[in-house]
Amino acid sequence: GWPAHMLIELLTDQHLQLPMQCVLPTWQKYSELKWLACVNPPYQPCAEGLLQAGLDTKRFDVIRTQSKDTAWCLEQICQSSIMHSVLVWNDQSFTPTQLRRLQLACQHGKTQLFLVRNLYEIKHTSPALVRVKLVSDTTGFFVEIIKQPGAGPRSPIHIETNLNWIKKPHPTQRKTSRFNIFQELH
Image 1 (cartoon, rainbow, N blue to C red):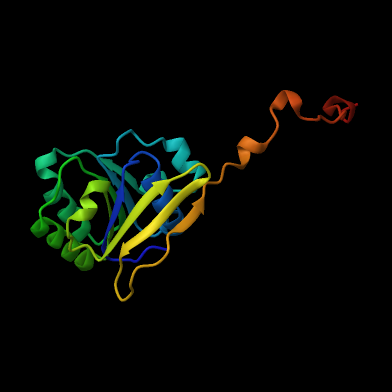
Image 2 (image 1 turned 45 degrees about the horizontal axis):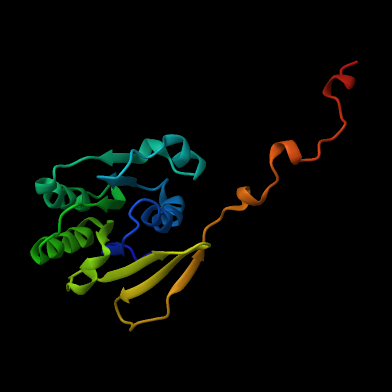
């Protein structure tokens, strides 16, 4: 699980799938308690996909902001006591002051804020208490913890992507039973 009530930076060059894959298990666990939100996602999230993942779409918001207003908007969202977790994609860099304000807002509102940032931001310092680097490979992705409270660097963690449906045979190649539903009706 991810730590609660704090700013978490997800540093990656794969902005489409990796952030959501990292956040989804936490969201599945807490989706019935409070609200969840995506801010400026690269694509419109699919309601059916969210439902299949076990999320309550009635407690899920998608918010679009102008780049200049994103930091202020996030601060207001994170201070709200009804929000559990927010996943944010941003096309511009935040200043250290903005990041500190977001961290304080998370603590005040008891909100978890996942901020997706470009991989090159790894060379800049950040007031975020947790920073992780996400890198995909053919079987899943690696999570490398760059910064976390009370601990030093650790070895990267490999998370396999669950693609069991790919291993299943094509429907035309599956064995079917000879049971005929109409025989029982007679």
